[in-house]
Length: 308
Image (cartoon, rainbow, N blue to C red; front, side, top):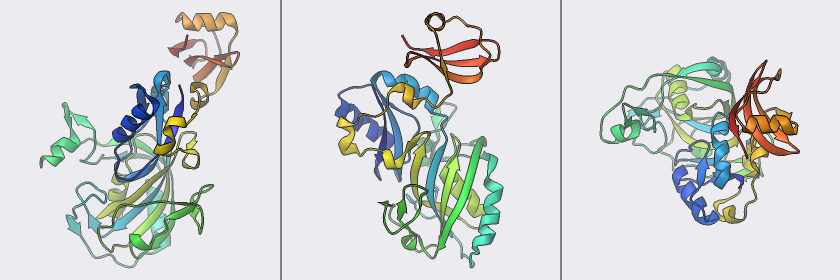
């Protein structure tokens, strides 16, 4: 019943990966903790069988990315799917000016999601409306961007680094090498390392960074290097899914831990609210086994989910 980090290949949807996991693990009960677009690669966290119970507690995990943003060309999808529907000449780019501009995108932000996204408005999926030639009015959402580091500016995405060392995800001669989508043309490209909160669209960030520079832009490559405590360097390939051991539920939950006695464990499993001084979300264990996820208000614990 493990939680498994998979390295999603290019051109597969997250649902494709879930279907392959169902076949590989011989179960229909497989969920994931956050969608990756078909043109993105990297960490997709899967929960198998009873571990699907922990998905709700992992969807808010922060995420790290490497993002290639090409300037001077915009697309309806905001990524390299195309087609190009906006172009502009790109003036010489100054790395220090770009770093100063990126500073305005860190911290709490209001972000408008892409039209080509799975967001529903009035029962309609935005991408379905967009593909039919329409457009939904998508309200801006509160997101958090923890950090944006400019790793380089290149004459075109084809010249930007593809190989990185897994410790700090800096460009390197040896390490992990990534496959990016086919380039839409020869457009100046920024390479960013980003750490963001849940619900942040890197395609929207590419659009907004371009707008701040007065240019159309699109996300020409994206690799997710971390989800919560799962790093890409520890992720398994699709081919290794069947044999992957993954992590048990308790190890997958990234919350402070309370060690219960037998009475407290029994009360929590009965839905009672034992008195405790903890504040915030915690994991409760008994003899190293998962009992419950709880929310504390400083006076008592309220069960969010209990395990038998």
